[in-house]
Length: 176
Image 1 (cartoon, rainbow, N blue to C red):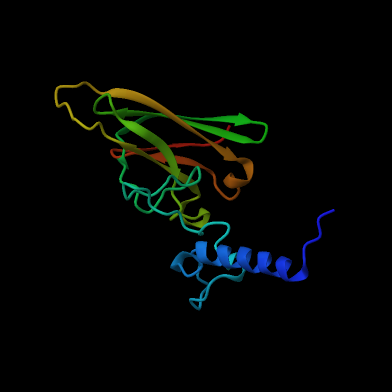
Image 2 (image 1 turned 90 degrees about the vertical axis):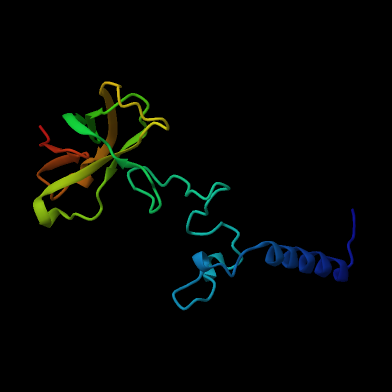
């Protein structure tokens, strides 16, 4: 059995705590409490910051499904041509067909519009965002893209249906 003197144990603990404090980013604004002091729940920044940090290119990492990051540079995508709401045991699958001006649109996604509330118009609104191709082609013909998302049953409480909006129009559908 290895016996470590009491002084050595204290030194090891002190070095470990010092290393954690020195390597953490406890003074960052994203971890600060409402008064500007570091959050006690994450005082040493061991669990990362609350806000996603930009990557090397300066863009924000993707947010959780169904939410849109503040610095997302995608555009509202094209014309909504079809919307379907399929029932599942735990909710609904919202499937939308969007006509975009040309092939090459990418990162197309249905994003919940968090600005609207159930009391405003009784329709849960999703916006279709996408990134256009790097080299636009004015002679290209329109292309249909299908995009889908899951909506839990609870999410539709207080709403009479779902609205999907693109750049040129919006289409509404009621659960059936």
